Image 1 (cartoon, each protein chain N blue to C red):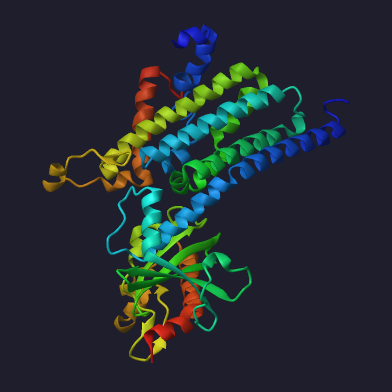
Image 2: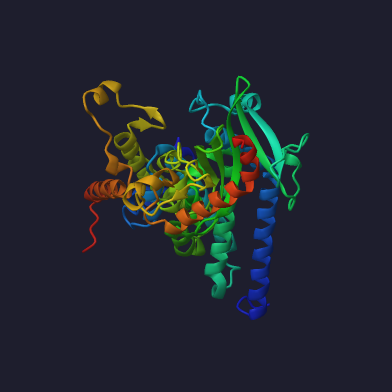
Length: 211
Length: 238
């Protein structure tokens, strides 16, 4: 179905962000939020949606303005666009998903300084037309989301024994002495999983830092 | 106009600022009612949490059932600086700067179970907003909650966690031996390591790495317990 809407080169742009140069496993950007919001799957999903929205839409806007933006103030113009979009996303969360927005607290606001968003704006949208930039933003947002969701699923199951708040570890396990793995709730738990995911992804894609 | 000229740069910057401000104002204004309703609901939920209902709300209680419990069990009152109840006033009527204070009375089958009041004060980065509830003896803490703050996640923000708030339950604000007011304080580190045994009922465990937030919590409890003391004096009786 995807093929009906996207040409071959369009698909390549999305795949680039999703797999070949995934912002987290390849560029190792945006790690701070990846650690902070992956204790539960629900917060991770909301964070992924917010980031994908911001990176895709900011790419389109900046790409549309790219020939008009004076190069002297281009970074601050990018930041203004990005922060406006982040605050809009945050306001919608406060209005429609109040509990989640309370849990995410400062981390939605911190999308403003997320290296992925700035990186795509400066590195891609400033040099490419809006449609391509949109796809690039989408690809990178989804690439970030995939990794976050993987980490969040693992951390919530191992750390709290639940998934999206519903218990998944049978009570009999607990009765026989099973204990939730406390370290998964803390930041180191995310580091372990991110490390393993990066290792597997690079093994498959064959990417190495030294050539 | 040359795109790289200073004049163009200034005009472009101005246009970006204007467009961003406009977008933000429209979104903020458009969602205002919804956000305020959320906040009002959250406040009621926090009052119910602070008074520690004898039959706790289910974890995923919907707005309707929370409001229902609130309307049935919480009586909204207003007291003045002398501790007298101002009849016929509700907390919504209080104007800014007026020396009137909201008081929420929790009743179970007509019997008073707890008194709850808002506490507001400075933390490290932000203003902390919460509720503080006393048992019907007006000496023992029944519960505390924080519903709004901007403290560091993992450090100061621990004030919103269960382990910190549950510490307060059963602590005292009134010394029956010496008949004096001693509002409960946040200790530095574990209370049992730093506080003598006879003072233990007046201290809760602190948050390591969040000394300033802990001090803020101590200060705000002290301030607001003193504000409500004239009223609690009448509850305790002579």
